[in-house]
Length: 495
Image (cartoon, rainbow, N blue to C red; front, side):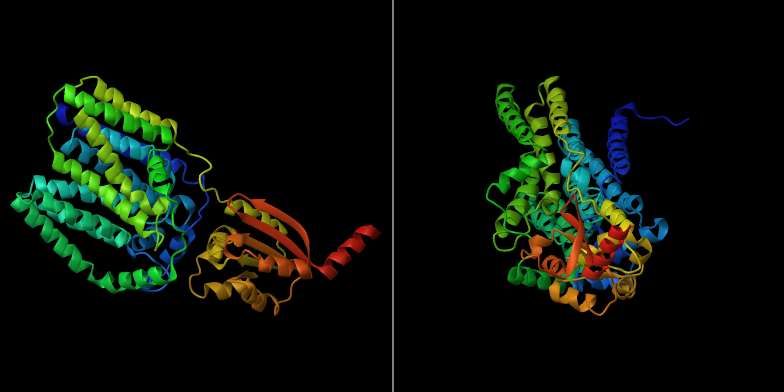
C-alpha cells in the first residue's frame, strides 16, 4: 500500500486542482470562439514540411519556429480541427498554473502561490489567448518555468538539474517568441543581486552562455526583423499614454481589482509595521518586480517608435506581476493567521467576479462561411480582401482545400476563391473569368483601404443584391451581373 506524506499532500492536490481546472475549463470552451486572428496562419504553415517551418522566420513569419514545429507533429497525430489544435496551447496554459504555485509556495509561502495561480486562472486575457493556437501560452509557460528554475538554481546550486532545466526553459523562451529575450535580459540583470552566491551565479552565467550559443542561428533573423520593424513599422499603432496603467488593470480584469490590490498592499505595509514583520527575501521580491516591470516598460516606451504594446504580446509579463502581488501579500500579512487566507482568496474572488468568458474578440468566420455556402453557385466567384483573411475563411469554408499547402493559391483560384491585396490585384483575377455572381468577403477592409475601392468598383458594375454583417468586422456582399439581375427581374414579373 502506498503511503502519502500528509505534509506534502497540499503540493499534490492544490497544483493538480489548478491544472485540471485550467485545462478542462478552457478545453470545454475551446470551440466557443472561431479560429481567427493569426491562428489560421499558424495552423496552415504547421502543415508544411519541417524544412519550410524552419525557414519560415526568414520569410513571412515574424516569430521563431518552435511552437509551429511542435504543432506540426501534433496535427499529424490529432488533425487540424479547432479542438485538436487548441489542446496544445491549453496544455501549456494549464501547466503555467503549476509553475506559479510552486514558485510562490517554495520561495515566498503557500498563499503567494495560490494568489498567483488564482489570478492567472481567472484572467480574461489568459482565458482567451491561452487557448489561441499561437505561441502566447507557451511563452508564458516558459517564463514561469524559467523564473522557477532561476530561483531554484540560486537556492540549490548543487542540484545540476535546476541549471539544466533553466537552460531548457530559456530555450523555450527565446524560440517561442523574440520577446523571450526580455526575460533573459532580466535574468542577467537581477543575477547581480546575488553575487555573493558564487555557485549559483556561476551556474546562472553558464546557463546564459549555453542559451546564447544555441540561439546563434536566430541572431541574423532577429536583427533583420528589428531593422524591418524600425524602418517600416509594425501593424500596430503607438499606445496611448493611459495604456501603461490600463493594461495592468486588464491583467486583474478590472479597475476595481487593481484598486483593491493597491489598497490591500498599502494596508499590508501598515500591518507589517505593527506586527514587526522582518524585511526578508527582499532580493527575491526585487526579482519578481523587475521580472515584469522592465520588459513591460521597455515594450511600452519603445512602442513610440516600434509599436509592440498590445495585450497578447505583453501577456508574458503577468507571470512576474501575479507572483509579485502574491509574494507581497504573503509577506506583509504573514503574521495574521486568519487575515492572510481571507485576503488571498478575496483577491482571487474579485478577479473571478470580473472575468469575461464571452464576447471577447468575437469573429464570426464560421457563420459567414455557412452563409456564403448558401449563396455560392458554380457561376460564382468569391473575392476575399484583405489577402490574409483567406486562411481563416478557407479553414471553415473548405477544410480540404486548407490542407493543400502546395499550390494553395492556384487551387483556390480553380475553385473560384480569389484573395486580393487590393483593387488592381482583384481586377487581374476577376476580369479573365466567367461569372454571374461575385461574393465579396471583406474583413475589416476599411482599416486597410479607407476608400473601400474594391467594394466601390463592384458596386459600380454590378447590382448588389444582399449585404450581411457579422461580428468582428466581417461583411459579405452579394453582387450579380446587371444583365443577370435584369433577367431575374423579368422572370419574376412574368411569373
